[in-house]
Length: 159
Image (tube, rainbow, N blue to C red; front, top):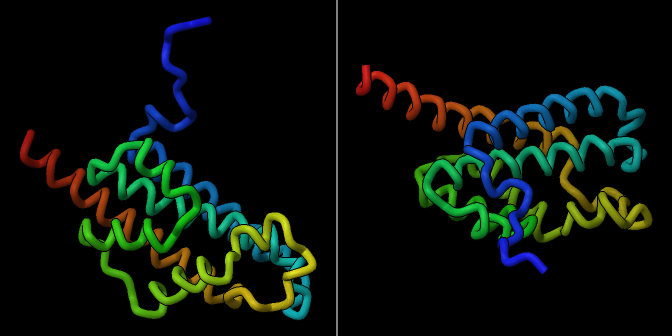
């Protein structure tokens, strides 16, 4: 048996790495949104919903890493968007009230679990897909701006 501690995927990821991955999931969610067939068929937007929720989680995780939270601490949050949002707000992230309310509703309605495992529960109790995409777009814009603006400021001090 090896005495070497086991590492987890993501332990060595930088905030920029996670931000790029979040961007790819956002792009995937946008493509999947276009493929959703009907508003009255929640299952047709399930892949988009899963990619969008995961992208939001990654954006918030990138910001938490950027603010010095460890990968272990972030991993211990599991898929809790409300706790990620609370911690990101402590780090200065400012979201619209609708966006913040939507992130809390996603957790309260257990949308991540329903979209992954509960097709029988996809009866429209989740957030409207347009609201979810608006939430994703705002989180993307604000987290990306926060991280890249800080990086530019650091670089200008060095040069």
